[in-house]
Image 1 (cartoon, each protein chain N blue to C red):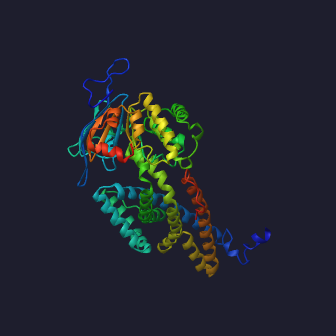
Image 2: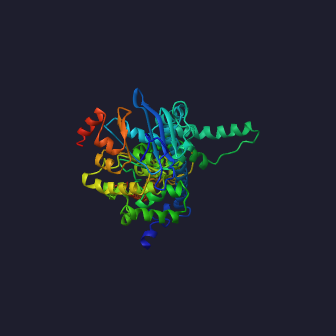
Image 3: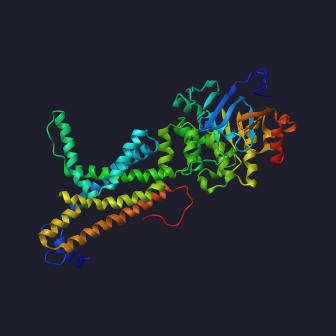
Length: 250
Length: 268
């Protein structure tokens, strides 16, 4: 193993990746953790929006349906980079206008919070459509049986529709997660120090662009591979009770 | 023995008056321009088995599904165990909570079983008692075990529905309906989706329930069985009650030409 760690000593080829300065390894790992924090936070937010959006689109009143149609259409039509740039400046502005109207002082929103809100809001539009399709795939008789025994609409959703639609939703949800981990890289354009921005800085300082972008690429790959395993496990659990079909997972 | 045509209130074996379990009066249902039910009525007292027969499209399933509001009636009156269901002018229920309450008294059995596929048989049986009726879980499990023994599925408690035969699934679905201790059972063509060799095991379970004096509405194509278990038979034609009466009269001496024709086509 010593030869492996030796590669990361100063003066060696990979010395620039050493964990402590002048190596950039530590900074890259910090960037990675920021990437994961934003991705997980916005995924949770996007899923919550998606559940509400999907049920709203299917069972909501005409106004709710129209508003959601505008939301999903607009968000999915506009390039994410533009949305991030727009919302990144818009969200703090709206919050501060709101605070000023209440007579409160302006605040500086932490970039990690704004990034999470923006990506979550964008993800919610895609999630709405994935979950809407999955809810429609639940056989009608399953819902009807729940209604026939006196469950409230909330109980039907919670006890039957949501657990059953998960099997149909998870492949699409896994796709969205993988896209999201990579979309966090778009936050580099607004200078947020996630993994890609940190790699840019490291490359710019040391001129070893190839090294740092390769390292970042490998880190993204590791995220994908590990989360693929998690989604495969979740899918197996969601498919309990269904005769197995070979394959599955991502 | 029963029912809509009886002059005085029916009595049980001890000579006590039996109360009404289900009363339907002048029920109408339209789908768009299509009038599926044109004013049908029925009364089932405690312990009655009422069979509803009729051709495809006669409205028999719709009638059953209107009773627990899986279909919204267009107009009419529905009384379950003495409780009048409040309906708006357009027939829709005035109170969602009342409908939920009414549904908890009616054990529905579907043609296509509709066991919840993500739950084991045991989980299916305790789902409504535990989460809707708030029965303690241990008590619900104990009751479910007895019901499974009764329908001959004690060894299937931990099996998912997809791994059972249609007959087994339907017996489990009947046990699920019994688990809510319903005032009445509603059977919507319970054997129509089954392979012929599996029909018998399901009918045996239903026959047992009839014998123990359960109140049941049974929409069925099994004429021999309807004659055997029911106290009262209703023949629906084109959304109306064409003829009704005791089974021996209806099957033995049908008055209506349409009923005679119907019985011939089903090979009676």
